[in-house]
Length: 67
Image 1 (cartoon, rainbow, N blue to C red):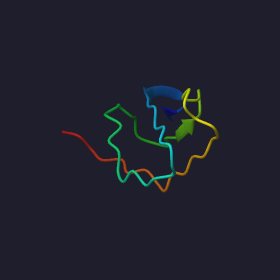
Image 2 (image 1 turned 90 degrees about the vertical axis):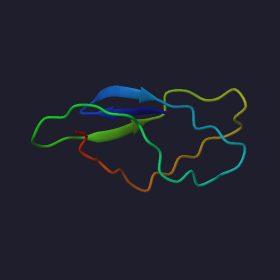
Image 3 (image 1 turned 90 degrees about the horizontal axis):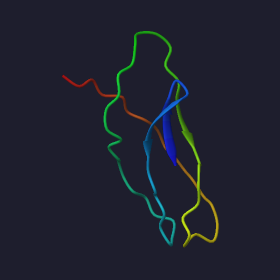
């Protein structure tokens, strides 16, 4: 999966698991955003070779200021 901010990809992550599992919070690193409307998104960009299907569930995002 690729995580995007305002349409620009900033992190690729292979979240393959043989069974559906809750990961809990994941740190996606840092990126700089400007004041105003910010669009955060996720795009499926590939499939792990071990995968026999596709299922994605995201409960939410937390944007945390970094100092």
